[in-house]
Length: 569
Image: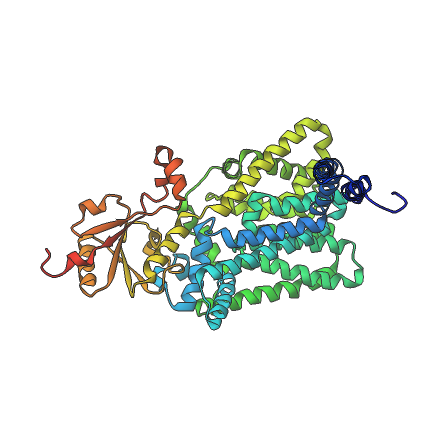
């Protein structure tokens, strides 16, 4: 058989086929005996399959899935899955500083007085709203505009950009990783770490900044071994990427400052510097033009941002945290195992590779954020995009110091937690997205719906903001086109408006933080009961009524029109 070149699977099939068909014919058995022989042959085949074929199939499948191509393909499929199912945003700035701005440019709402406080002060970059506006215009021109389709496309493009940046950076650090196995570990961490999978698809400034810093480090490392004749080109590319990183998120300027010092100390190539200047200037000019389009006048948004948030300390109005906040908060949000692992790997990398360009970029970036009074975990997100490199190198250096049994336990526990976190994001809609979809269904068969609420109460369509001056920030991006939102200072004025609108045959709903408003209000109200959780979860897993917590202050009441006709009170 070996001469014929038959493998175990083919050999097993040939032997079973011979037993099935040749034996009955040669022996001349009767019908009953043939059936018994066939049954025995099938049992033999099943035993041979389990013994010979399954291990070979398993090895082939594992070999393909664990190959570089298999990991990237699985990562692309996961990004597609997340782009479709991972809705909502990590922080409200991801929505109000990008999507609502773009919606205002597309449809004229929200009006300026109902945008976030940063807009009148012209302190946010117009690049991301411009990208959303361009996609929205394309969907409108095609007649298929939908906020959910727009978000899907944004997240799909974000995921593709993240995957591309990861691959480019992986090639640049291939020599540091040592071998192909370590490179596969790096890629697997980059596409399957649950918090990176989440960040990769979200169209936020942190995502763009993190990936652009990856690309900047990658092209810088690649340029070290490049021909000196091409230094100007590498400088042009690096300068453009550095400028883009600054334009999308001004805080990356601290990382770029460290990068500049690294160039002066370790990479004194004047042709490289000469190429970086026009690349950087082109990106800064692009940012300036996008701000001119966005605000309707010439302005320097980085200067405005520095003046308002740093010199005038408006950022401190959102809270002040101690210096150690980033350690505890990142570990709490990322999980103890993953949080400790990322910090240990990152600090070890900084210490062991003190002359590395990544160290010089990230250390000043992180240190400045430690000293700023207002702290949020998302401010560190651009640094976490380098976590696959940190963890892969730590594993390479320390795995021999850990026993095989302990390694399996650690990897198994982390895989289980990672899989659960990925699955939760895919299957569970955030409460606000569920609310928007519910209102879409409610408004679908009605000509006009008006949602009323008190100006001092927060709901999913509007919320009060008290920076510089009181203002009501509206969420118009997900609001149905036949729905409007009105705000009132007192409950009496709200009830009066509800009666007037209902008399004009308009459907009125009241958004309230009071779960018992129907029993207290002078209006005839019917509470619309809703929950983002599946019915079986509410029915069988609602211990201590925990499913009510996310919606108990987001109540929706329908004003009953039949009881509001003149003379009914």
